[in-house]
Figure 1 (tube, helix red, strand yellow):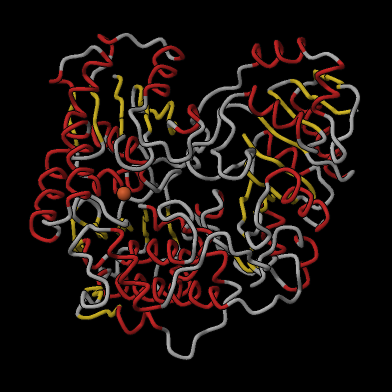
Figure 2 (figure 1 turned 120 degrees about the vertical axis):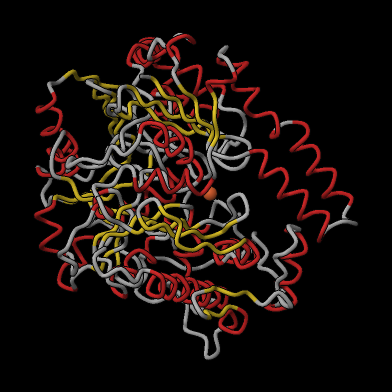
Length: 575
Ligand SMILES: [Fe+2]
């Protein structure tokens, strides 16, 4: 039985494959096109999937689209005619998007795959989020919270197992308000909410939180004052103007932010106070909502999906302030996960006792790597070499898996920056050792070098760590590791005596974002480093998705001061 899940047209286009009840492949389209959050028809991902798994049209049993395009079409135009009628530019853009493309999504899939339209179905946006979480969790009984900016009409939905308990409409979307504030802070909405979250840790608590005046929790509902921010309309430009009227002028995105996780003290930055203010109200609303509606005392498990589930500070706060100590978040909680949720709606629940598999993306193309390496001459190398990245030749080693783990651990211990391209790529926003850059976690110098010379990443955004379960028990305050600890989905407080051990990857509030490991190659590598901890960041340049192709990874290695790269069974070392 072959089931494909597909989503595109809105945020992150993606494709998933379930074969005989097993999730085999999931990937975002942006990994192939290198356009972050690419929402176009996932042509490249589908082509890759069909070729890689040798799937013919007649072998496809079902295709499920992770959205109800007809309901969404009606909803968007209904909203337009009720609230935005005289906005001509919005009408043009809406018509272009819907009549030109989105409304014909199902037909387009059928044509591309060369299958009958009868094989294609679609499901509600929030149901797809819910299935991506609940159907992969090990929970028989669970509440499942979808934290979205806007789905089809709803912003927030709560299910008890498969039954919808409560939903909140877009006009009271707390996630949308968070995105709007992200925009006001000068960052990209629907993309840089984690930057707002990172900035919030530098903020000072405002005497009167402005968002508390316009967001309230009453009788189980989250309410946003529409006389201040009118979300009945879908006019994003009007929303930001309303927010400016309320808070003052937006931050100019070119204004430098002089904050750093690596400093013990930072100058006061007013915008950080507002980042903290929205983070606090966001946490308060979601926790109030959960505690109000999750009344069944027999259920102690909580699934969370939707883009809001990527707020790792919220996840810890839920654990600390609700009855839920066991939280499950899927690999891609945002809209990239809709394709998987859609496919799961046909296959049914697949949760089992093994850990959630994050490694579902594209494979290492070792032949392509060998071609590039064999074509490199000394002139090419001197072109790539620079003041901060000096080398004159490359050494290539072929080692066994256990030898590779020992060798790379030793390199980490010796202050080297190591890139990993190993096995299938990660599905979802986190680099978890398959397409990662790693180094010692106890070196601020190395962390700064990665920030300034490789990633071009703002120093107020903290790095994450990968560490063994045993080490996590020793250094983290929390001892109860639910599945979110294995996928960098929660932040965690570090005991004070261990702050220096993770000084390259600890935030200003002494939290870190951990990935615990317990088996496999990456675990073996980490186990053999001096402290059983590494700093881990995604293998990409700032503003781009994770390196999809091995060739891109190799080029990033050549032009930046990464010392060593693992490419499947090859290790390439700069000399
Ligand atoms: Fe969504």
